[in-house]
Image 1 (cartoon, rainbow, N blue to C red):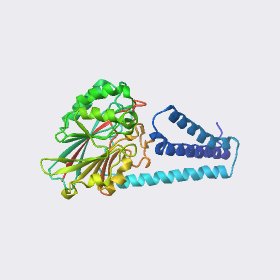
Image 2 (image 1 turned 60 degrees about the vertical axis):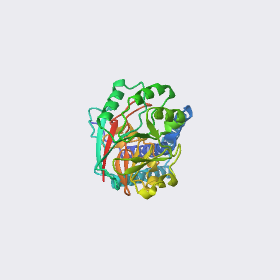
Image 3 (image 1 turned 120 degrees about the vertical axis):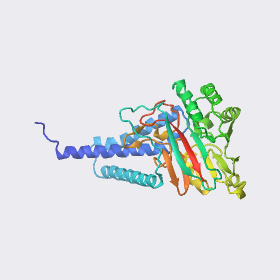
Image 4 (image 1 turned 30 degrees about the vertical axis):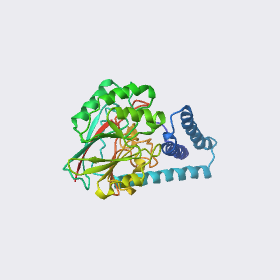
Length: 357
């Protein structure tokens, strides 16, 4: 019979586990909050690798050298702080999440969900709305690429048209490479026109590539871009104040833009690429906010959920429908995938929200 591991062996394993957890946690925090939103470059890739190797060495070398005392206590302290942060984020997420989270069920036997388009339907209140129903269809993070089949994008257009939207809101990242402009142009030509208009903001990738060219392409296909600006959308009765912000990469939304036509007291709906702007937009009076950018994590694990999310709030607003102190926040997993063109346990989604008074 094999001998049971000695106490010292378990102690060694525990130290290695704590060091590994601390190193990975620090790497993930720095990557999520800082590096992941850098413009794609060789320097970015090298920084990610160098940071991972440096933190691994910081955790592993003392163990290899059998250093004890302060090194072990430091690893435990870092791991505990990271765990406490995750608990706080989990609690905030729980307190903000609505009964309609928008997270599709996971099929364990089908981990690759890159083109498994989910149709998400939500019902929500919009105080001040003067029509019985306003249907908004939200499309984000197209990241159009030749790596995905043309039929997938054709289905996306068909499903969008089938929703018969009153408003189509596009919240950025249409491209990852300028060489794909013809692909985007072809898709936009088939974009259905909503009853009250199609509106957009740009994402970080669009602003890094060629913002004016992409805005012009959207305009040529009947899409109004709101870059730190607002528009009053007149409905059959009343209307909504629709605004867009491209912060922190582009024009942000100022109170002066929101305040125009304030006397009408129209409900304020805001498009933003990143959900990180939700607290600022809440202060501006936003009743509803539509966001993307997170891709829902793009690669999720059963039970655990997302691992890497480009947000200063970590996984707090990675995917779903949240009520942030009265502001309804809708964070979509997006419809595309690029770098790599792969989704794991995280299907793309086309989100439809029916607002009622």
